[in-house]
Image (cartoon, helix red, strand yellow):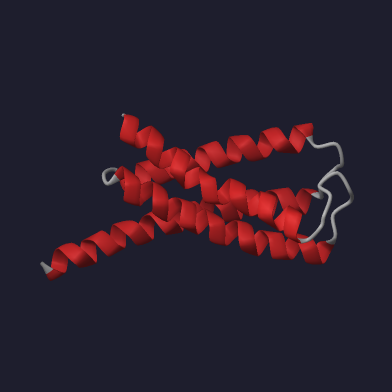
Length: 125
């Protein structure tokens, strides 16, 4: 149980860090209106971070990898919806929808990649 909680927390770190780093690096104030070019770049970074987060959660959990990936994706969706409602500036609906979908897909791709990697390692031994 503790390992599962640790896995999900460690998997969430790159996802949260990606949001903060992209906002700071671009000098973008999250309370200002969003710029389309910045939105697209952020979607790319967020998706990469979600894949990494999915891989980490599966690697640390070391069992029921896809279930742990699903838990991380659900937490990501809940947190994303929460921040959507507390945001001072309205965020374009297309951005939020695409970001949430890419986050779920990215997490599951990362977790699935770890499962695939373990299967390849097991096949070689």
